Image (tube, rainbow, N blue to C red; front, side):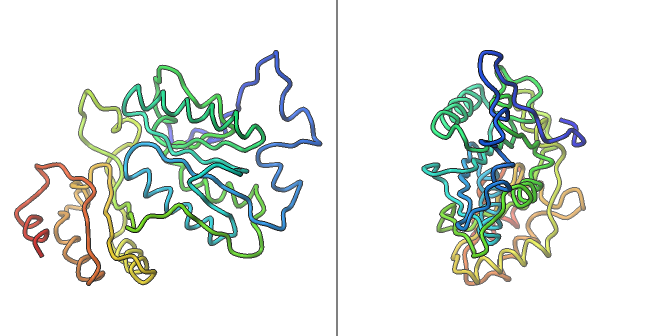
Length: 270
């Protein structure tokens, strides 16, 4: 999907049903947060499908939202906003997403549904879930979700909370893929391989350890390709990261066998 494409995709309404936005007294979506300021934090439900990269992205979003004054959860019991990070690697993943979206809409008819992830970038899904949500963000515009929520839903003055956490800290270090496997759509939806800045990654990992995490899990769409576009292999970064977070542990979520070098192997036995 073109990165310049607008992220706001209008949700079509059936002619047999009255439009939600037809009633200013019952504004939905982004307008609700501004028209009816709340003394308590807005409840944001984050739902993640697919890979550990998706989870890492949403864990980071959830942490930022909680610090900004929102209540974040992986449950949808009292959701005002639902953020769904999707997968489209198989037809079953698309079906699971559609089932989730329809269920959330049925249980929370007034909630604001935000869809992001690979399903949004799939140019030819068998049946798209995008028309069933209020707004969709392609992968390239996923970082804008925080600003979108902060601008359209007034957070509470006091800090919020998050239950969207795990005992391990998931750190996304790489995105995209330069392989062109004919059976895989991920390289189309995620774009070219690119690596995050090493200094910023080490700083974030150290912060996580300081917050009490005893294990850092590195995630990436093609983790073994980290640093390759800069002419730098993965192993030296792993060595520096291990030294920076000691005595915390480091885990690789997944890596192609042909990217597992002898140097990487020796590091795993440290």
